[in-house]
Amino acid sequence: MIEILKITAASPPDQKLKQILQRTSGLTDEVITQTQAIVNGVKQGGDEALLDYTARFDNIQLTPETMRAPREMIEELAAQVNAELLAAMREAIANIRFYHEHQLTKSWEIERENGVRLGQRVSPLEIVGLYVPGGKAAYPSTLMMNAIPAQVAGVERIVVVTPPAQFAQAPIIAATLKELGLFEVYLVGGAQSVAALAYGTATIPRVDKIVGPGNQYVAAAKKLVYGDVDIDSIAGPSEIVVIADDTARPDFIAADLLSQAEHSEDAAAILVTNSEALAAKVQAEVIRQTETLPRKAIIEKSLADFGALIVVESLEAACTLVNRLAPEHVEVMTADSEATAAQIKHAGAIFIGDYSAESVGDYFAGTNHVLPTGGTARFSSALGVYDFLKRTSLIRYTKDELYRTALSIDLIAQAEGLQAHARAATIRVEAE
Image (cartoon, rainbow, N blue to C red):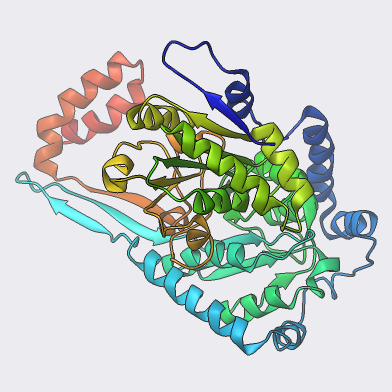
């Protein structure tokens, strides 16, 4: 059962809300320790260790020659996808590409009156690794969301890794790879594949950045290799917060809460409203709609542990609470949704109005669904083209300007105790 909580400015801290705020990514010390051993093994043992872990964890015997999925295999699997689904995927890909093309930034240069020219060169990463999970379900949308921004940025080489056992059973993933033109696919998964991408083996190239979701061992591996290679983020459990007043439809709200609760038992689904009557109606709708869903057990556990229907004194109080939560997804369904949404400072994505369902963003609108979780929307953003671009500063100083500023440079460098820094500027003046 999803609880109804009443929170006022004068009420003591609510334990359920505290429990929601303290959710973690599940990266325990034990998981980190086990993953570190795998990462070290691949770093030192290369292909041999990678194949050994694949045999041990996936019960599949590969060789360096069979590690890469042949293009023919990808195309044969892709051919199994029906035309109607393929057409929907193509439209989604076009929407995602259109949106992300607007994120492109250009190199620039300025010249000051003293002749000094400064600028910034924007260039794509050369090679990116993309992890495609192979759990109980296939997620072509996540593959699109990770690959398309990299392609728009101009990344020349995208290397895909995915667990071997599930790949042959998920034609939709092969079809997505084909539609995106991604054919460098290695049938290895888990923490071992992340280590292979980070450090390279004889078969798998070392990449500049690793993106894509996975289980707790994949997340731990990304955390451990960060610094030797860039990563997108350490994603936590999914979450949605709906802000609504008594003008909103309870059945819409319930459906949207359930769309996140079905992700996993640690997903969070929360309504924040100024209407106690609406909260009661949504509670009844959640119970009714849950009965028809195949992931009922997961939903019920998620809602019991991390779901809540929170009643506050006003919409302003609702926005204050949501900004405190800084959730992955925020939906706004109020009499003036635009005005309410304008008060939200911290969210991965904001869905405004009764017909902006969160699943629209997950699959089709074109915005990226790889979003900050666990309150990290306070300081981070959705995955985008900018995550696959480097910015390099350009400096062109003139002789006259160095002469004019050398003493200032000398004074600052001497204050820091860095005499060689100072000398690098003054030697050029003294040379004259």
